[in-house]
Image 1 (tube, each protein chain N blue to C red):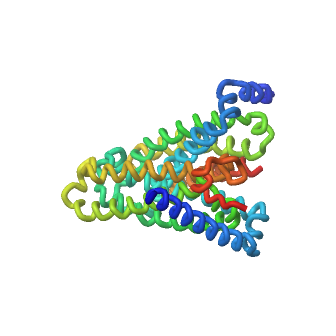
Image 2 (cartoon, rainbow over the protein chains, first blue to last red):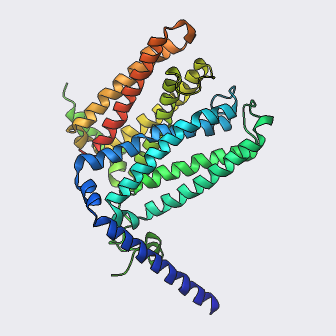
Image 3 (cartoon, rainbow over the protein chains, first blue to last red):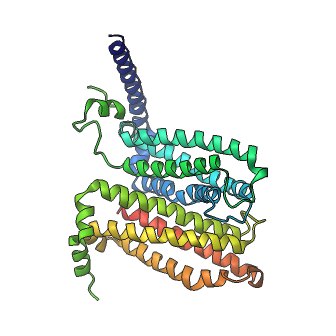
Length: 201
Length: 159
């Protein structure tokens, strides 16, 4: 009985959050800037192209940092040096991706907020961010004892491998946002509808 | 040479059938792996070129950076070609009439020739023996070529 009550309360909280998110998305959709971006063929597509092409800078640098930790790239070069030197271009890339990502969301807020792929992508981004913070902390704490070794210690290798997997997931779910296989206007199981943020009319 | 029959055949081939019939396979193993490979390929190009331009890793020998990045460039290029062929086969006839597809193929051909006939042979030796302006010119040309490949590739989907 208590468990049932708890589940009903969770379901209610989820419904309220989804309604609120949809209201915010509808408000954004009604603004002039949102309409201007979505309705401009060149503006929208160039923002999207920039978002995708910047993968080469942001993830490109991140991949080389992670590969160095795993001993698969530049094993003879100090791991700290690689990490520090590639960090700035990587962050510039992520900043561009963040800005273009916000603009893409702003252009199609109601569609995107109810995309299960977008929601999974946001969760993966959050986990990847936490993993990056942990990775950097561990790197700074231990680097002086191993930085010239071909491979990083086990805990850093795990973080690096996890980072590669998480970012592969971010790329994949990001690409899948374009597909509406599980969108709210389709017949979905209740749990999937709730996860995608579907709100009853 | 008339290429349309080849594109018609590609769409009816096994690869074309899989990509056309199973949207999930097309989007995940095709498009998503293509994008992941783009990140690795782009990273290997930028790591080398930004080093040659003296923007990053100035305290790491450029020979080491170029050698190591080239290894990953080849791997990424292999994945990009495999997933690219898979994706193109599924929509081959549409690709035949798409100007950006041909722009991308041209840029890709130039990029591959540039890397394997010019950039790699040049960077294999000691970089101190090469004129600095030539290293910088190669780096700028490389960035422009691969940016063109990526941009024209993304634009295929918009046209």
